[in-house]
Image 1 (cartoon, rainbow, N blue to C red):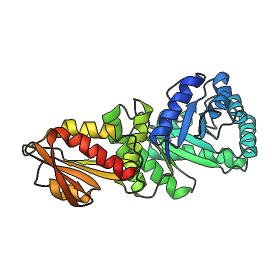
Image 2: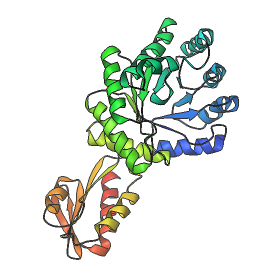
Image 3: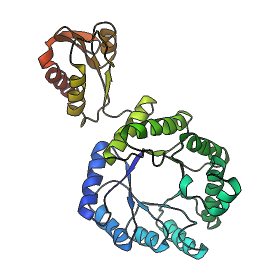
Image 4: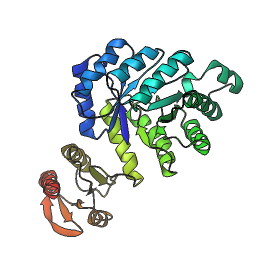
Length: 329
């Protein structure tokens, strides 16, 4: 399942609803909202009345915010049982969550481990993160609560991967995968692809959130590309395009950008090939549902492995977009 998080103030109901709908349109299936104050907690009800995605309330420090979020219909909580108060307060939250079957994600972050654990390990090592997770899970288990999901996030990809592997050997709770504070679009995509992709390829992980410093819609797009590349899920148009070289005889950069933008709203799984020349182009294009192999001032259109016709370069984008839309209509 693909998850993201809103970047709006949750108490700005209109702005948050608009962003959740944009995420929903992009394929997001679970959305987390920050709940830093009581106004945000009570806003959850208004937001849920206007959207269809499950809403996860992100809670820190104040157990009353968790109780209010549950009361206002939150579908899940993300919290750290160690920083919302003593055992009595945790028990109240667990009791309310149990009564409404609201799952709790224990979020362990390498940047916020307890002082006692850091003193023992010296640094936020994978072993330190796992010990923290087991201790926090134990708090909820003491209250006979098992609707638990766990995340072990770090900006250091090898540590993140090692931590999930270690915890996976010890526990069987669902895992939420993510590389926290991964950065902007390009470096963040690389880090998330490596971390999340490695674990998913090993069968580890149940939900994913790609963390990027940009529009959260991009997080959803990258998440689906990771899932598609691993053959786990297919959604939307997959563009297969060559990197180009001196043999390329059409403006493939502009063509790929125009076609990708035009087809971005399509959710039907489809493979579209954009190849710049006749060396590898025809073979790759034939393997796609529809594709183009470039020639001098023209492109050869293929569909389901068969040559359809030659098309002038100026008409390539229009013709290919029309073909795709006919195939998914």
